Image 1 (cartoon, rainbow, N blue to C red):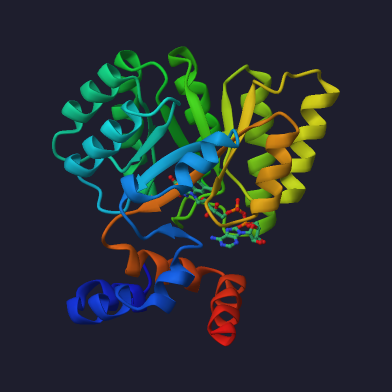
Image 2 (image 1 turned 90 degrees about the vertical axis):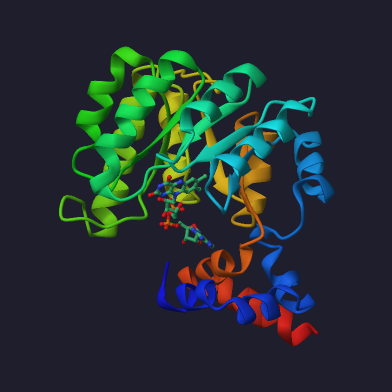
Amino acid sequence: MNLISRYVARNESLKKALSSSSLVKRIAQRFVLTENLEESNLIGKWYDQGFGVILYPIEADAQNYLEALTFWSEKPVAGSVSLRAPFEDLNLVVEEAAKKGVRLEFDMRAAKEVDQTLQLYSEIKRKHSDSVICLQANLYRTATDIEDLHDLSPIVRLVKGAFKSERSYRCREEIDLNYIRLAKMLINRDVKTYLATHDEKIIKELISFSEERGIGRDQFGFQMLHGVRSTLQEELRKDGYEVWKYLAYGEDWVPYCINRLLERKENISFALEAILKE
Ligand code: FDA
């Protein structure tokens, strides 16, 4: 979180004022679900269109994860819940997910937490076989992690990586090259892989790679954030690929949203456009 979103997160009255403004809500709805899960018709619309949906509760605790599992268990389609492990009562959430047949996806955080997250994933994957692990292409270690995970038949969400460390590539070109190298490695080894990137150049290169080798469209899929590259998401879905939308939601949506606005200049221009149209 950057300084501004951290300040807002701690300032309850400012947060309340922002979350009750209809303009702020309108801008926020591009990135985040500002209403209750049950009240939203967005998710129903997406799965009618053939998208998968990954729920990402902004308040990362067992109660919110259990609610998300119940939400999916009452729907006619398969859904995912993204977790930031570890947290209290993780085992309870895993048991419930297995009982309710809801897929769990393990987010990956800072480099110092990678060993622990991989360890947890290894234990949980044995009990709940369709669980997904996120791997980060900016880390030097990820090719070795893929080798080590091999016997577990992992399902991988491959991202460029949002956390810097001493053992990570810094330069954008190096991260992109490593992303392509790791994606090819995963796809070639028949590891079910979700390419979680909005980078059209990389997506095109990997689609060409799979077509040249006759790799089926069910071997890999895509995951993208709600509100980012929506047209591309639609095109990929129409081309027969699995496409999952990653949807953040929860009462504490204001700091999350500020963070998203500040991370990309195109998001700020979108917000300014919305304000000017008022
Ligand atoms: P890149 O940053 O190069 O962006 C490519 C283009 O996409 C940009 O030029 C821009 O146009 C557009 N774009 C990308 N992000 C945007 C945004 N936020 N708003 C507007 N436009 C944007 N990281 C991590 O470390 N651990 C994790 O668990 C996850 N989980 C995760 C799940 C899913 C479904 C996604 C899509 C991403 C993550 N990430 C993540 C984040 C990931 O590591 C990375 O920081 C972002 O996806 C941005 O990288 P791109 O691959 O999109 O490329």
